[in-house]
Image (cartoon, rainbow, N blue to C red; front, side, top):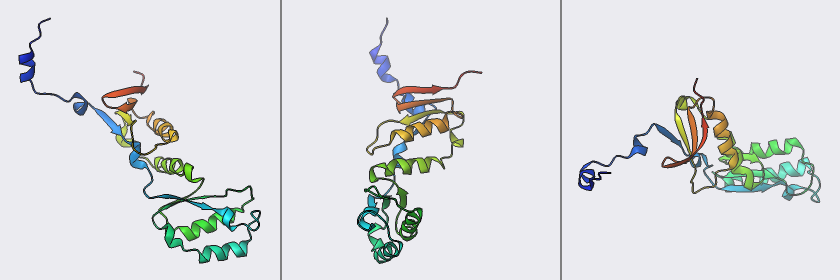
Length: 178
């Protein structure tokens, strides 16, 4: 094999990854902005068993909702109590003018719900006929459900889906040739 190092050094470096037709999607960009804070309905229960409508309404009315401004509210009940459905509606009504988002879940589940909500409105059309890389490394925890859902959404329209980084990917899906 004739190897001419001098000739190779005269050639410009070509970034094949940058010049490829791969399109990278970074799910971390969909991570909910703002702090995720708990809103435990247990604190509003009579004897940690039942919710009294009048007392609950008064408590919500007197609550300083400003403390939740721009935050994500995870509404849940940490005790085994039956919560009437209207209670969640009242919390949402009071929280809406202040919070970035609100969801019925434990705080640890909030990110997954937020990802799935954003993916429900994800426009797949720009990815039609493309080769896609779903970025694997992130600083924020991207839930597994987000990877599953983005794959489900993109598979019908893309040529291929890979996981990882453009320089090192794991093939996930490749459209069969017609």
